[in-house]
Image (cartoon, rainbow, N blue to C red; front, side):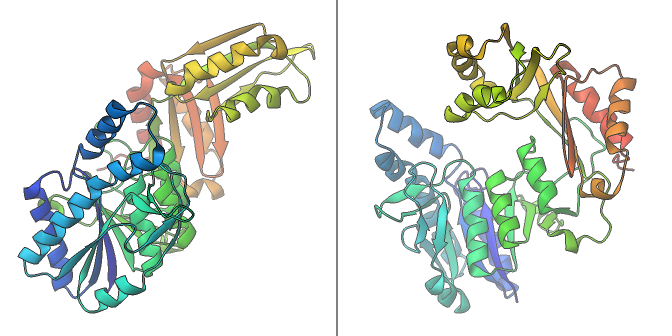
Length: 410
């Protein structure tokens, strides 16, 4: 017998029929003798509808009341799913975040989980009752009001609950049947990975892969929660998914596990920046204060010791804000010109096997050069190499790299 947390996203519970289907899947785990807790999102599209209502009533709404409204989406789902389980003869009870409670800080709309009190859940699960828990929400530690967790909140709720329950694993049901070596829509020969390390999944999630949210992977790695990515459709229930686990559970590590890409990139270049100590801090400080995440950075060598060019990337949605902040400080920073462009994409190769193998970056550079793809910016870490290229070469680059590292199936 195992203790399992199962998480189902909005499309998996998008209508009553799908909720009944999810209930049948949960019932199978109960019949197998497992203790089960389920975390669900709001029905597909419901959170967006509720957010829209808040904005239509008050564009500058109170964040505490915003959380009261948007948290109701999950409350509807847990009640319907508990009823569907009961209809199948499975004992089940719904739980909102404040009833457990899931203790969070009081940062409404983007709260972080501090603690989950699981004593009563465990007692009931040991008696055979399924706990159906609302994802995405909690209870503020200082104001005792409903909070929501922001982007990726339900995945984070599920992993945090699995950690608190000391569950054997956390199954994330989604619209894909696992984690692939790259996007199968671009590379039909992409392979599904049976296992991937927390570090690799964290890099994949942050570099463009949409399977899991970064926050949930960070929490899984911190608390050593084994996460399995599975497809929610019945025809895939018997198909193994991808297990996200510690490196010690993977006997033979791939040199490269995956190729990711992110189109959410804008490139900013400042020309003829004074080559002086502290200049980088003066440039990036205002961007940090404006909550703009700077990613790839490259600084050209200063030939005369006087001035250099500085290039970096920001999320596409933050480009105009970044430009405005830098232009407002043009006199202080003393750069000659500012050039901001879209139309670029970040392509990355990821794998824990890089730690013990040389030549990974060279393989990447050669594969791109052989196809006439120019590299604009390069960044590296212990288990990844990322390059910035023109967006028009995205598919060609991903296919070339997938082949170059021997990832093509069959």
